Length: 314
Image 1 (cartoon, rainbow, N blue to C red):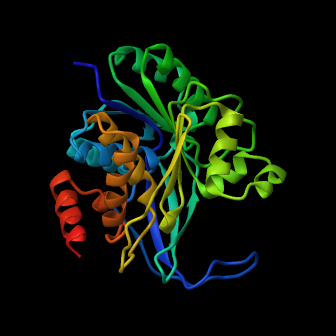
Image 2 (image 1 turned 180 degrees about the vertical axis):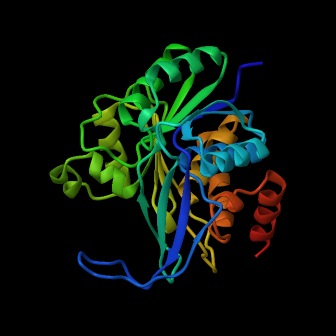
């Protein structure tokens, strides 16, 4: 069967980690420690693996090089039961890599290299989507060329799929109306960047921010993540917030956003409300940031449920 619960259209790359005590300034030579290649993918392979481990029937669309980093991404996704029929391999480019700098407090700064999806063609994506036209939802982001991402989401909508977008990293260009997006996942910084500086400076709270974002882009629902402050959600016209789950020992936050998105989509797929899905995803993210790396941090349902039960007992 070529119908899936979720199709993921975004990049795969390999993360290299290094630990530092501060961010460098221009011209500075920064010494770091424990520089290593970890089990860390791009936003596409991260979300796909997380969904697969949460028992969501998942397919992936993207392009990687004919190299060991592409092989590794294919293995990670296959091991998570993700369909990789449309993981295109090419000799045109190498699979992308990224550098994640980790602070002593576990916060991160991510430097993305060139994506192998720079040579992905819209015709390849549309053909793949057409062959999976019975699927429920397409989620995408801008680690592939943003025009391909947006056009693919529009096309998926024409095939009666739901759509989810994480517009990261933000392009310099205007995105236009996003009325074909059912779920827009953004963080607080991205939200302000998507609004004008003058407008965001005048907005006093998170509710005003997400309402202004909806007014400008017309997407159906907005999920704005705010790190340790939780998330603020505008479901159609209903605003509410969901608290973050406190974590005593934060190890690595690099994959928290991708994991949160995957967990929300997984629970929506089960029929939970957006509020219930976000609450469950908050626990999922709390568990994830207590584990080093992104791929190892995406735990299966039984481990997440055990963590939730243990957390509620304290």
